[in-house]
Length: 273
Image 1 (cartoon, rainbow, N blue to C red):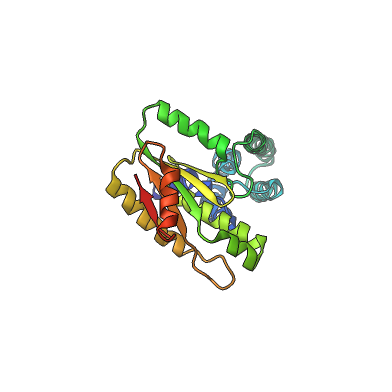
Image 2 (cartoon, rainbow, N blue to C red):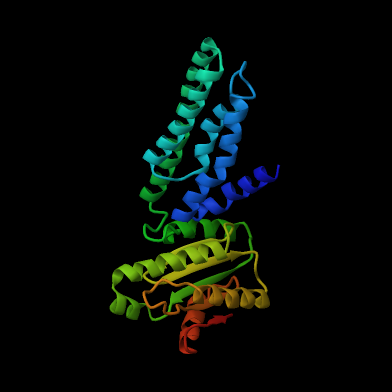
């Protein structure tokens, strides 16, 4: 039960913040269940079909977003291990049935992965995501913010600007400039969680709509915490500290003016109205 809860949390939250570490974690967190499924479907069930591992083959790929060839190799490795054990432990007629069922499970898993991959490609082609940071772009975010506002969701709009970003590009090159934007974008996405809207507005500017937060004190507390999170990022070769300036408007569209005020106050800060 504890494992199922942990895996559900992973599937709903962690995997949405994609990077190499979370992809590796996806495989590792499945390993205990896969080993248990193989054991239950073979050693503990020599006279019946191995439904446990067959269900895993059909479902588990939905929780990993990785390159297609890796996913194919992963599922084939599980299937080959299962069929190898079944060949030695089960009657031959039952083994043949397991081969058929395994093929069907693999096809279901691969078809599901193709559907997910196609959906993600369509989202990019429709121009809703920024190709560098994988956050919403202006078009994708505006649709979601408009839906929240039309649904009478109170909230706070933030405009966020990376301090001295031009100097970063000039001093370290565009490669580190892009890595800076990616790291800050990912930090914003994780910090503000999934029910809020985070977008790259353009250049080194980001916009966040915090759903349901209308207290000035709560906004100030969040932005103070955000400053510390950004300070902890280490992207540049000399580990120079990054900072952002933030303008905030509690549901009245004045975030850009507050951003200008934060810049005028010396950067690495925020202004709220």
